[in-house]
Structures are given as structure tokens and as C-alpha cells.
Image 1 (cartoon, rainbow, N blue to C red):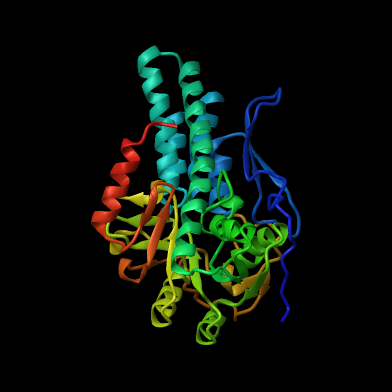
Image 2: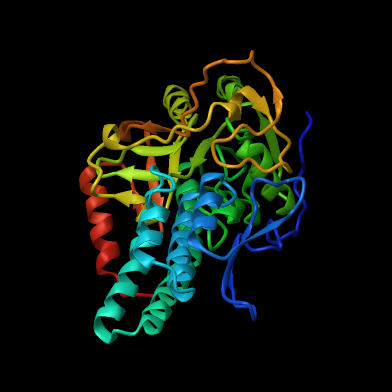
Length: 382
């Protein structure tokens, strides 16, 4: 079998370059991003000097992943404020850059509220900009801390559900340090299992349409020394049938009040397979991904991606700008119409547990989620 084997004692980060950072060179503050469209071929950074550049980076998936989008959105508001741009317009543009991931809106609103409150209190735009930046930095730090707690809770759950270790975990899309201020969500749990000597194999779905599992999760798993194997999305069923999957771990871009989970397209079929084969299907996400304002799965807006992402093959080191054709190699006849949703929605009855930094919800119910969110709101600020 063509795969990678674990490297014992290897605890380095999946990439030495942070996924996002704020810098203040002499020419003015900037937001620096690791361009995820260029991985794994090369590690290249994007420098954003205004919110419009960040909006384009979000839409092109140069920066992506629910928790990191929240952090990016908050920094984007701060960037507009510090550089003297129209903050309200920047916040509106950032919030609408991707509709499904609720964390983006949460991060934008948090920094925007801090800006508005300080401006109303002092009338000083500089003080307001400093407040927005402080809010973004707090969110960044809180996400790193949340990531560590999710990994702890997730590993404890795996140990409870699957005593004895030797876990064979299937994951979908990318949920590691590339999407987080820390080590991620679902991937962080798998990484914790690896470090504890309990991970036998990480099955990595390639994840259509943009191959974020193949390009990004395999990249992180290799650099973390984890035992992993890449598979096409539609090969997952044969793995379940062969009894080769002990648990499914995925992240989430939005969790509705009833526990419906929006995640990268292909997650729902995995949940169906897991239920049929009596395999735990576990969602790992921060509490900020739970959206009490979205009552159920039918109310989640699912982003539709450009058709060329699946009718053409584009080398990862060639940037894809927005909805424009990427100039790749055609793999479908010219003029082919493509159905290319970025996400699908898994109903709560197919989810074994939702793991957050505040604890685990299982069974997944509206009442359980509401109680968890209330617990998070009452927790002292970090």
C-alpha cells in the first residue's frame, strides 16, 4: 500500500510558517497570510494592505477554514481601521466574503464592535483602531487555547468510545494548523492520538473539489510524522465495508441550533456510511461555530463554487483568482455545466458527538447545544 508511516518523536508543527500574522513594517501595518492555494508545491505568503485584498484572499481560498476565517475577519477590520479606511464598509465586505462559515461573521463583528464602542466612548479613531486590533489578537489567542482543549476532549472521547488505542481515523477536508490559531480542530484530535501512541492510521479523503485533503491534510500529516494514507472520496465506502475505519473526525463551518452540521461537501455521505457501519461520526469545532440564529440545516446557505474548479485541473502553484477560469487543463467538454457546492449538511441524528473547547455534546440535541453555548457565555473571559 502506497502510504506514509509514522516518524516517532516528531512533534514539529506541520509548517514553520504561521497561517496568519499581523506585522508592522515601516510602511504601515499589514496582514500576512500563508497562501494555501500554493501548497503543497511551495510555501508562499500573501501580504494584505487593505480589506479588499483580504476579501479576495478569502474568496480564492488562499486563507480558509472556519476558525482561521474568524481570525482573519477580525484582523481585516483592524487593518482597515489602523490604515484609515472606511471601517463599516470593510466589515460588510469581509462578512459577506463567504456565506457558509459563521466564524467569519463572528470575527468581523467582534472587532467591529470593539472599534465602534471605543469610538463612541472616546471619539478617537486611533484608540478605536487599537481596540479593534486588540480584539483580533484576543480572538487569535483564544482560538489557540480552544484548539488545545478540543484536542484534549476529543482524545478522551476516542478513548472512551474505542478503548485500547490503535485507532484508524478517517478525516475529510483540512482541519489542522492551517485553519486555526493553534493545531486545529478534528486534525488536532488525530494529532493528539498520534502523540499518545494511539493512532494506527489516518485515512485522508482527497476532498473534492479543491483537493484540500490531498494538498493540505496530507501535507500536515506528513510534516507531523503521522501514519496516513490518501484516498479518493468515493473510495471511503470500501474502507468501511472492509472494517478499516474506527471513527470519522471532521470539522464544521456552521452548526445550526438543532445540531445540523455544515462541512465540506462529502461529509454527509460519510455520516451515512458511518451510521450504516456502526462507526462513530464525530464533529470537532469551537463554540463560535455553533450559530443559535440558524434554526436547522435547511436554513444554512450553502456556498456554490465556480464550475471551472471541477471542469479543469489547475496546478496548485498557479493562483486561482475569484470566479475566473484558472487556465487549467480541461477534464470535461467545453461548456459543461458543473454542480459545485462547497458544503453539504449532515442532520444531527447522524452525528455521534460534537466536541468543543467547552466539552462534548452527545447525543446531539438542540437542548444540549443550547446548554453548551450558555456555559461558554458564562465562562470568564480569557
